[in-house]
Image (tube, rainbow, N blue to C red; front, side):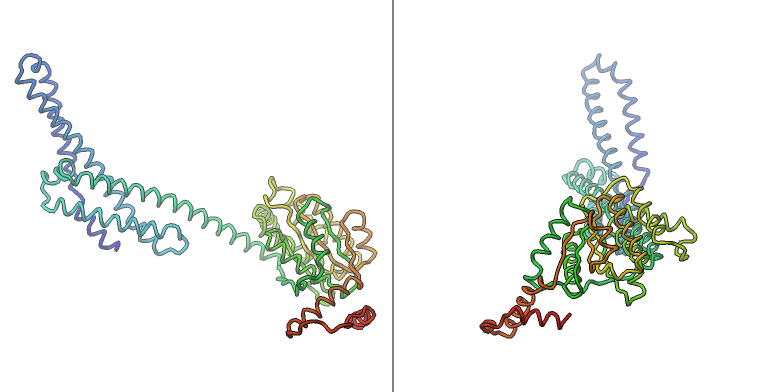
Length: 422
């Protein structure tokens, strides 16, 4: 389409000498007006002539204005055409595509109207078309619509450019953050329906309130702490409030490394809140020795979390954000966990829009740091009785059995099953 439009533009553009001719004609008549004004006061015939001259001046002014408008339209079309052709080839500018099509269609319509009215190329016919003919209004409407589409194109371009700039910034940040060696962790199985209801409700209220910044869920192995952590992470993701999720594993060198935990938290938080990500990227780029392995838990926390957070002038509108850490007792050695806990508590102070949800078995170093400063929730083996019953009933329903046999449930039997299982 753009090639055919180029041809139409070449055919439709009126010679530039026309504006010069119109200008000379108006100048000559202006001179007659200067001489004729005194004469018009002396003779009635002169007054009649002066009236005709004034009418001609009005027509010439209209002709000049219409030609200038038409020339401006052609100039815009000629300038815009190669640009539109290029923009059609770019996939990033989605908002522009429908407007570009409208502009191209309108350009073709406008040029065909002009060509059909000026095909003899005579000056008189062109002037009749622009000023005197009934098509003058049609031309005015075509020019007005083109200017309207031109404005929409400019707005759409600014919108798409803003989106593209945002994507480029995001890409640059991600490229820099890749030096954090982020480890992708996918939450495991979640709680079955109608299980852990009270515990999950308590966590939900805490996560969406201004209560203590740290929630510690503790209990023996096998009581469902990890499934609760996975469920909480899923619910927070849906609510748009999950800052990071991390599962510690003592049998995995990466997942038992406190430094990796901090790097993961930094990486995810940087993606969740762009201003923080920009600050972190600057820190990484300004440190030629970053990633050399010389950092301690405290120094890495200071560099990647505390310092960038302290430089922020604003906080996210949707707060608080929650970091979920499962099985913290399996992260590093005892001294590492103590240092890490101090950093996490400091994190919720410098970033007062951040909360931390922690699960672990009950041990001395974690208890000593969280007991007085956190919201606590203990989960025991006895708390699982109802969940086991719900689980078995759900399995019965999957096999289309109407109900669990009478007398099936026996607390002693459940305790025995749980103890054998754990």
